[in-house]
Length: 351
Image 1: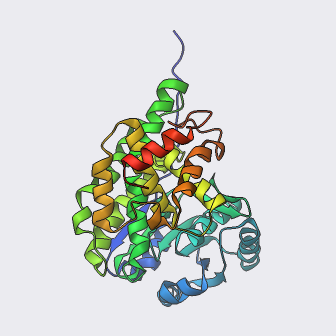
Image 2: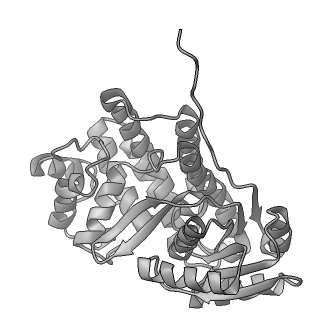
Image 3: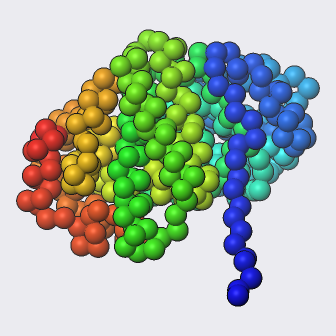
């Protein structure tokens, strides 16, 4: 009989604070990670005003530098790393939306420094995950990064961001339902690594958003409270799986293809939400409930609402399998043909 030798490393956020005014407890969270008193805030120009200056005001007794950056590109990552090293920081505070937090994740991973995620918006579940989306002239790509040591999700701050961002984050989590079908499909056909706990957490997150979709509305901190917890849990499912599999399947591949071929039309989560309706139809699942939840939240459900022509979203569907050939999904190795894509889009009302 062979000796049992399985093992697995899971990195969870140590402290998660969510709710009204929790940004004031940033010093407490910094103290809990035991990483000295010299740190760097990585933020953007707008997010520095939205929350970065408040964070600084609560950090008395600490030496904190401010690194203002742009998108999560390799050039900006290298610039931020140089500034962090020059200042001698022992931890990072990521204050901003998805791109600033993604950039901080990569700096954290490259320099082996802990970071705390302090989102100013919640347009996708990356605020809590160990995956980062890097931008280049060829589009976006998902890469492994550091997991946050702590998360401070202040609903008072996040609710001041444009509601469209929160609706996009909710759509991103709802799209987990088709990502999970792809993951299970790949497990059965290709024997890919699978985590039941990550699967369950991702599914629970999506169902929470769907169940509360009628109560998620603009101009409401209560809506932010209802949404932020599942968004964080969804990101945590990726930490458990050490992969984006629990939250990213064919619907994400379609979204990334849109980014490459038709950039700047819509937000990532919005695109994933619409794509997931069609992928659930192809699976023969309950796409109507997903569509209804997206409508309740105010997220797009059609190509036109994404700023796409009918032929453009069909083109993205047909070519999505090329965007990531290492990930097996319902699209298969050779993609789906134009007629199948058109049928799915028409039957679900996407076009």
